[in-house]
Image (tube, rainbow, N blue to C red; front, side):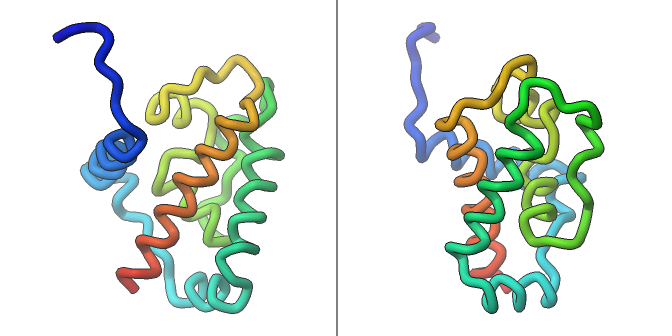
Length: 128
């Protein structure tokens, strides 16, 4: 295969969500009714803002003292989505999303992670 093969954005997302779905750990995360109700109460735009803020504060810095432990397993739909999509710590982001962990996340990288989280949340809402 030639080295200049590039995936489209849709192909990348399709492959990513397929791989996440095949992970026993990642695929066990689902939104519960309380989180679904919270999303309906707040609206998807507000949830996206929460995701932006959480990624900017907890994942974007180059050095995160508690990396690997900064994202709770419950308490907010975005936290659950982060574990389901491997956007929960820089180690998982490196492994699953191919983004190096030794430098600050760019605005484009942050927007990508937020998109991944929101795609997962929207899929969960459709399947609820």
